[in-house]
Image (cartoon, rainbow, N blue to C red; front, side):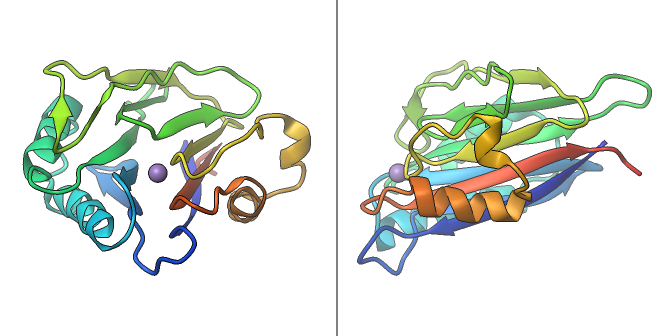
Length: 197
Ligand SMILES: [Mn+2]
């Protein structure tokens, strides 16, 4: 099982610096994606989002999500702070595939045509975070479509009609065009779950 991922991000109207950011990587053969939405917008927000991505760049790949959340919280101290969602595809040999992750603050994760329970933890990385974060585990099937987005994307776009014929990249473009709020940085990441073949 693998993920076909596309993402788009743009700053709010009147800004060149983007306080949202996407990070993609691989930890010990597990694909990982993250979306950050730093508080506010502009240069300081962009700095916080960059700092969050830097933490992931330096992470050694240990799939310990509470430890990663704690590290993000610690390293973002003194910055504007950031909402963030981090998720990885766990696919043990012969076992079921699972998307495992956490979200702090307002970065949502939804699936097309099915309800998933990607429960978020309230707080702001770098500003306030409860001791126990919620780690979600979502069983995945080939054909699933996942969407992670910052609060600069709003609206109802979870019915199949809207998605008809759209690749992950085309869907990202459509969502920014149709559902992006002009006065907030906006980011969307789409991941289709595909067979290895
Ligand atoms: Mn935002």
